[in-house]
Amino acid sequence: MASSVLLPTTLREAYLLFGRSKDLTSRYDVLISPAELCVDAAGKALIFRHENQGAASWGILLDSLQDDDPAVFSRTDLVDKSAERWEGRLERLSLCFVEIVLSESLHADEELCDFLDADGSDVEWLEENFVRLPFPVYPIGDEQNGSRWFLGQRCPRSTSSPRTLWPPRGSRVSRVAGRP
Image (cartoon, rainbow, N blue to C red; front, top):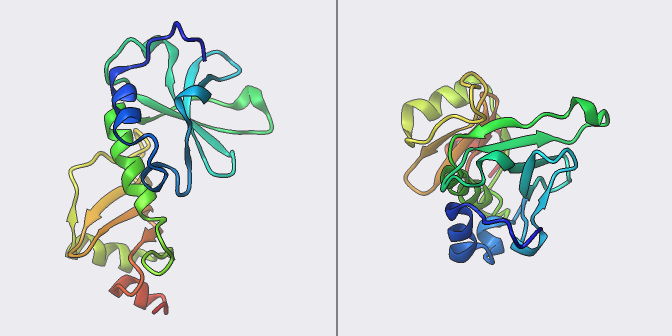
């Protein structure tokens, strides 16, 4: 990364606050270190995060680097590179870092977390029994299938689509799926 580029305030502050805390930022997907920040091959975005298998990246469009809290975009890695597009993920980088910490917490010790391919009744039960956090649905514009966050008595829960649920192991939703 060219040293002449001034990073957005929110990105600098996030690296200072918890950038070295892998348990908060890189249990599953990877927050790139400041020294490894790079611009994508098309020259459109500063990449700061990669999906754990390299299938996607998160970035800030270069023309918004001067903003203190710019929007975040994601790009799926495709075989046909000409089809790759930066698509809106969250309207502010600060929200993205909240999402990073929340989502990485779902990948904690397997004794505590679980994955469930939920059906409509599980999601409906979640919506009826837990408090939806005041966090925007993402990616931007995907109200029907986007991720939402809920808070229960013991921990956060997330739906990353209407059919995917991240409950704590041993919870009612986890037991419905036959998991202890």
